Amino acid sequence: MSTTAEIIQFEQLNKVMGPLEQWFDKRFDERFLKKIAEIDASKTPSMAIIATKGSLDWAYPPFILASTGAALGWDVSIFFTFYGLLLLKKEINAEVSGLGNPAMPMKMPVGPKWFQAINWPMPNVLMAGIPGFEKVATTLMKKTFKNKGVASVDELRDLCIEAGVKLVACQMTVDVFGFSKDDFIPEVTDYIGAASFLPVAQKADVSLFI
Image (cartoon, rainbow, N blue to C red; front, side):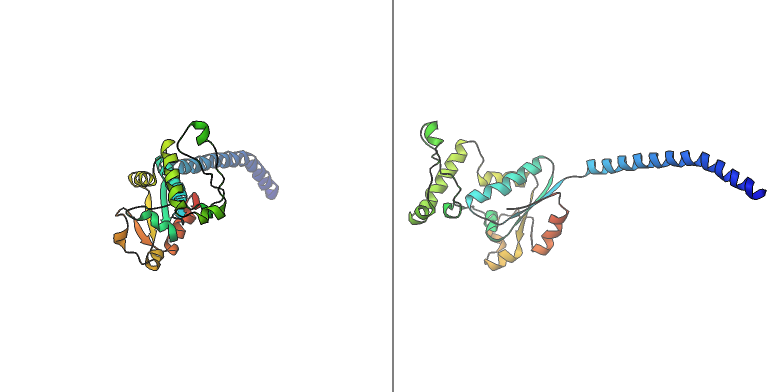
């Protein structure tokens, strides 16, 4: 008899506690999801860029992306390795190499607009065979960018520095190329190896290899 009564009491308790537990579960889920959303909203986005090239046309992307990310309030770091390390030198003497970039359009920064809009196809063989072609192409590119209101590489680098972008040099590349720290701008944040930067890239929201 007592067993039957206990069973009835248990069933009645379940009827009461069941909806209550569901209510608590729902409230917990709502508060948990809200807390997660608040944490995500308060987190500062981060971007890690690995810059490997030092030619003029490849110098623009890392600095443009980094300065844009910093302007958005992101935490941005650029790791300069191999030829990209040249972009940290006190004087940037980067030139355009059309030989390694056959898709590069050749535009003239002078003359009427219809003339400036023409893409002049330049075969790689011709680029390689003309003495001083790289200097001419570099001058044309700088002039074209200036006409379009695009900042120079030096100006973009200065923008990154002002915005707090971390400019990190690859210590191995410094050693291999025989550079010293005096060769680079004083704003270089640190000199580290790949093993130290990869964890930064792993945790970043955006990682780019340029």
